Length: 408
Figure 1 (cartoon, rainbow, N blue to C red):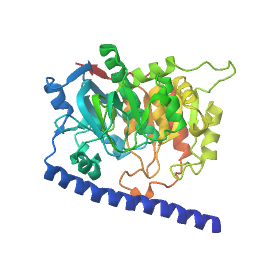
Figure 2: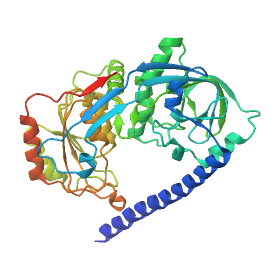
Figure 3: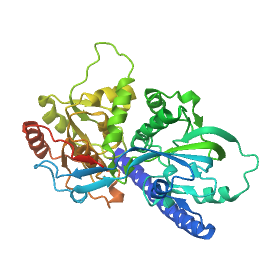
Figure 4: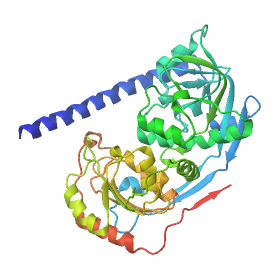
């Protein structure tokens, strides 16, 4: 009982600190909005870049994508956040922007063009980019830039969120744009990345042909760039470009180092999250009793290198996993059935990604409520009877769902 009480207090403090952090961020966001209005800063959107290509060079390389998201498998739970995502989405065409005589400023390396306008594609691909701009960045940019260092041709991968999901979908899938820029100009930009990159980030850069030792670690200050290369984001809210995912998968698979012949993974995978502060499965032993006879093997993502995670998911046929960043690896899968398990918190991003990639998708979790912030770090109980029925239904389904994607 003492241990349980201590654990509850610890989880309560974690949630309380994060709630306080959210309140502080909202206050600073309101301050940011007032500063933007006061300084009358202009934000250059992707729409404006594509419409007016006279000021700086813009290299389009991918047409718009139309993606149709359908219903999950029949035995899935009826989750409102999933149901509300069903529909048709159009992703904008992709491009690379070369901003001449630009600047990068502040903790998140916000890009400013030579007129001092904010380049929205250095922040996010969504129209509401302003809320991600720290107020201190706006103040710093207004100061004289005497003595500021100048670099030649650079590309910033500095991101407001350094987690695994955002690294893959907000940074790595934009490398297709970098490859296109290099093919068009013969120039390979120097990468600017967040400071002290984790080993898995360094490994992923190597798999894409970049030496992390040759990258510049951002110090949160200010630099001038003769050419700032800005590949467009390939994610718009929860909808991620399947074409960008396919490019990333092929590039990383082609650069995997050789391994010993005795390395083997099961094509039926259960992702275990026992070390997390939340969204772990409380009755995991019961879940494995249902899954193991069907050939499922449990894997912990934190115990695998990035290369092995790419290998694991690229050969996967069926995955059962709780909602979490480890599911980002489905971008490396090729022909997949996926069951996502929800607790009291989550979102529909992996449903949308799985459907866009043409995978069969099912979900369980009647307690899932995206507004339940206080329950974000709670564990989850899985209804094993429902899980077994859903697995059997998806195993017996004939054929594979095909992605409904058109370009124009």
